[in-house]
Image (cartoon, rainbow, N blue to C red):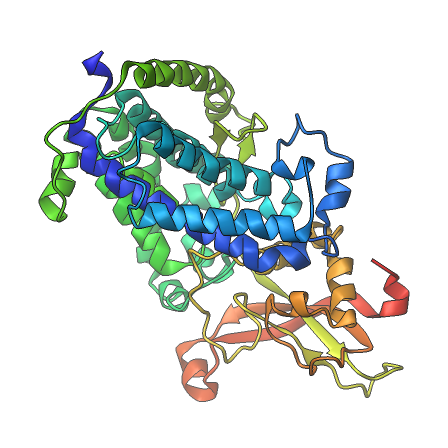
Length: 479
């Protein structure tokens, strides 16, 4: 059964698994740092309430067996230790069964988190990490020849990811068809980074070329991923370059980074061996039991691929959906529509016991999303600021905050320390929370060069309304 393995991809597997482990590490760190105010026992969307109404078979998770904030933290720390060991290559010399157990552990732990994460874990890159992580289980350690079928499943995943994103754009917003979406996108994307303003200021001709290059990559070049070498490597390099472009122009958590990592698995191993200080072991084997197991897994994943494949060619294509509770084969896509105007949610508080026209309102500053117009947009990706992202959605439609936004305001009024740690700064000293908070909506746009030179501002904002009138803790009630 030697035809089921390909030693030539030894270095490709090395690059892919190290990169995937790094993404796992970031994901577990983000979960540990943010879970208490988001989904903790006393958070905005508490896990215990979710577990009470969710069956295990619909959302498998270790937390169905036991829940406590301390146990969740232990799961995160275990994931951090395991993924750090994989990043450092400490597991590469393990026996095959132990190496598989290590990657399976990472997958089970993160699946357990995603399946209780609710709104905060509804992003497409969560399922993408789980699907890629499941495939990594079967790749094998350093002394095992990489299985051909798993390498092709990785190509299939990358193809669905890119082609699905291209189709959803072509079927969605007309601005993708007339090549004008990038006139707006760099300014209105969820979380701009330090370079986004520069990209926004590029000429309309360059913006049209950006959109055209996106279509060419996601709708044409991706077919090369399914062809023999060296065509597949050339297509993968194009994907890597385009993802790098997205990395430097915006903050999309680990979506672009993980897509780039997936593309490294398609690159011919001889390329990596030529540019990296690595040496392939002289003997690479593959036990029969492992090859049989890979055959079984591949058969199951191909069967599960039917619905995602059908979705690609459906007129009612959906984005970022999982068709099974284990997130084994999913559908992806982003920015099927592009907003033309940027609206930002601004949360303010006052210590006035009876707010009126003369009250002084002070603004909370978030870590990543725009607030202070003089603050340069920060670089946060591949880290994921979940609250900041959801605030962007609330700016588009307040209904996105229907379940958790009142609880967020209640925690601010209580001066909850864990919630305040989600923010960059609070205008109120520790132990002295505001008496009232309110939520306002502002229209934001990047400053012109003249405005930037004059006032030193990155943004210009104008009031656009009030989402939540002044509210006190008594009015919100207990959590």
